[in-house]
Image 1: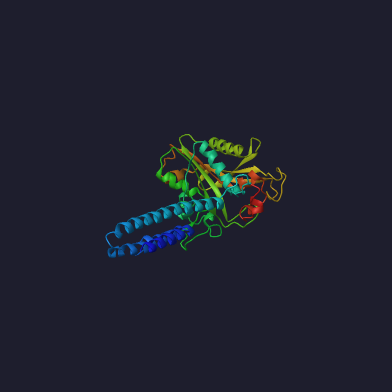
Image 2: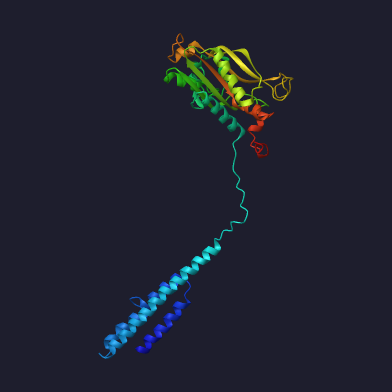
Length: 341
């Protein structure tokens, strides 16, 4: 039996020394020290030994068990250390190597101007309000003093979603103004930016989908002078003190008096060109004093309060801001164009 124990010791220590993984070590532990292992099997035969041999064989077996356990533990440490060193070599980071350039996206020029306009109005004390793009015709037209049969409600101009023409894609964000006035008491000072839709033919300055920011101020003593001062402040903040604007009379059902605001063409400086259709001016927005019927329909007394409203095309502001000659370039997703901004 003594020779068998020596054989187990030599064989096990050699196998442990040759093991390369922790799984291999666990298999060897089970093979030699497990309940059915080789050493355990030898110890079960000690009952057949003489009383004199038992202590000797028992002491030898314990020494061999201890040698095997120590060998397993030491080899496990060596394997773990080797694995760690291998991992460190594989994951070594050379901080002297130039880093890879990470492409970071940038704002679309429309988003840039959208944010600039929003920041300017927030600086003047306005609150930003959003509303639905799919809108009830009552909010898009009727409550803005545009009754059924009005040319602005014609199917040639508006994207209706129902045969009854009671739901449409909003043609302006003025519908948000109505929703605010119905649930808010003056003083009111808001802007409502967003996408709007009209059946316009696509050309250098028109698109069936474009971006607009509407503004509304309602309070006591609001005048046309307040409107003009606000819009001039916006234009000068965007384009500098030398920007040239003009206010000309117009008609909108929901404002009285009404006006349109133009900006001198940035391409021809007023001489006339393709961009401004030879007029020398580019139409930017419509504005005016809120019609008394609109105020009254929203539960606001027009004898006490007055207000002004305006709607600005963000797309055209963007063209002027970046000297873009064709509106279509903003929607073609051509990276060669967009990377310029």
